[in-house]
Structures are given as structure tokens and as C-alpha cells.
Length: 82
Image (cartoon, rainbow, N blue to C red; front, side, top):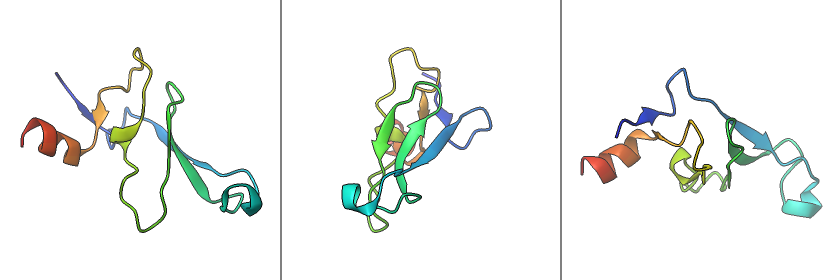
């Protein structure tokens, strides 16, 4: 299986802001809330600045998403070469 890095020029993801007031989710309207795949729309909630659990590897891509093979170097080293 050939995997691509999220940093490759051909991969596209975006940070989506909260869009709601702090009374709804505790975040400012412009504060980052989601990490999103621009191909299939898969999202994962961005944890606070002290957490390191939000990664490209956690995105629940659609089965036919062309970016389903995109992973971080940590994921590749830990699960494929470790």
C-alpha cells in the first residue's frame, strides 16, 4: 500500500472555525474547531492547545475518498515500520 503525506502538495485539508458564539461551544467564532478533508468533508474536532490527539490519521474518510491514503509520518513509523 502506498501512503501519502498530509504535507504533500497534492493533498488538501482545512481548519474550520467554530462559527458559533462561546456560549454554544466555548470557542470564539473564529477559533479553530474542526480539521476537515476537502475531498470528502470528513471532520475531526480539534482539541485544545495542550492536547495532541487531533491528527490527519483520525479523519473518518469516506471509503471512496481520494485522500484516504494520507497519513502522518508518525502514523507510518509507528504502525507500518515499527
